[in-house]
Image (cartoon, rainbow, N blue to C red; front, side, top):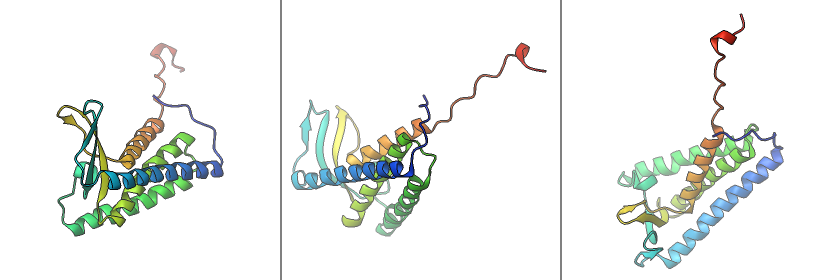
Length: 180
């Protein structure tokens, strides 16, 4: 499914849209992490909707689903603080300076960068760890523990992928209809 291309947007509209989505995603994530630290740290998991949704406090030293959490501290620092910081810097530059992005792509990329930026800030102020506090599942089939920034990253990546697909080429003309 490809979405129709939107009209070329003014640089100011693109920047305002990107700034609003970035601020919203970082702000919502940091606010919910603040509440989670105050209300969930040191408490047992809280279950809702027949244990489909849980609030459970965790601090993740690794990446997605804790990958790399057992690496030595220096390696974690270089991978999750330095390398991710460099990636976010270039992704933010791409977001700001790429005039060919549609509004939907701008919002999608801003969600992705905003979520990454918020988790990166966590690592800077929380000794290399990211605060996570939500978990979904049915029975023993459960997600990892995640946060609002992770939701923004996944939504942004999915939306950007959907809107970045090139349209498929029209089927070639039938042999009898080809011009000679």
